[in-house]
Length: 365
Image 1 (cartoon, rainbow, N blue to C red):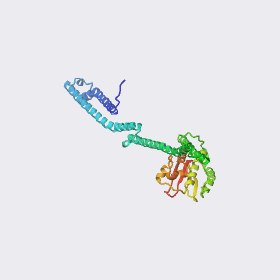
Image 2 (cartoon, rainbow, N blue to C red):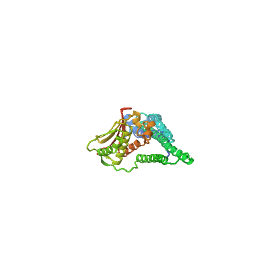
Image 3 (cartoon, helix red, strand yellow):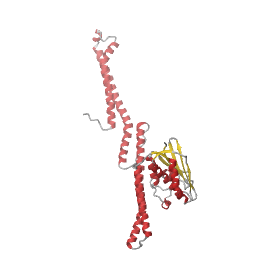
Image 4 (cartoon, rainbow, N blue to C red):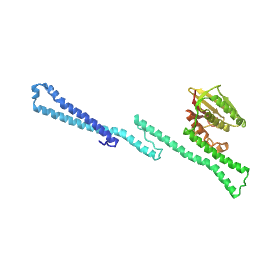
């Protein structure tokens, strides 16, 4: 079994040499078989003519020498051309491929910031661009993973520190057991339980392991039910809920999960809107999709915040987030749920101090 060289450059050179050798061999065979007859005809003799058969031996030898020299020269030129072309082509192909292979090995070792220079137009350029896009995605994923670990540790530290401090005080007799103490401890354990439940639901949603019953749903009816549900909470802060809905608007979704997304939007809108303000909820059909939105009169969002607000544990105002409640996972869950139902979410805002609009877009029926 013939073993080919492992190097791409060597394989390209061998392929070009084989092609050149085959072409040269074809020319040698053709000239050897046909050349003498044509030469005799050019000398004024027919290949079957007796005089042609008895042509001057010296002339035939001269013809053979000329053909041989021409073929040798052609062979040398073909080999040189093959080597030059192989070096040029292999340099244009093997160079980027070698750089890609080296970069891939470094990415495999965890260096996700690795990038390769562009390779121009064509398939190699597309390959380099795809590799860079993959590396950027891996780098972003790793960054989110590291940040997630830090955020989870941060979220767990506060209730655990509180529990540990009170338990130590109870053990040392510094704190007297009572209803207030037990209630505080229960509050902290409830916060831990809620955080773990949210993380589990987020994981299941992003892994698309949540049971979904996607079917035609009247989105307008879902919004009306949520408005009625949140009306007492809004009224407690003097906030008006203003639904702007058609009579009927069919959307393909899981009814409970759609309600969960919009409930998260409404809860945040009421939480961040000033007392005496208003929260608008609207729904409309846009082409082959349905958009449902909650518009608040809160602090608004910068362009950077609009791009990051659906990330895990992201808070628009970290200094006030604990007082306002929430772990920063609700919007991430909303994004994962929308994606699982073949939809998407986004946030819009005219700028800080001008409110924000949170939308979910799902396929229309």
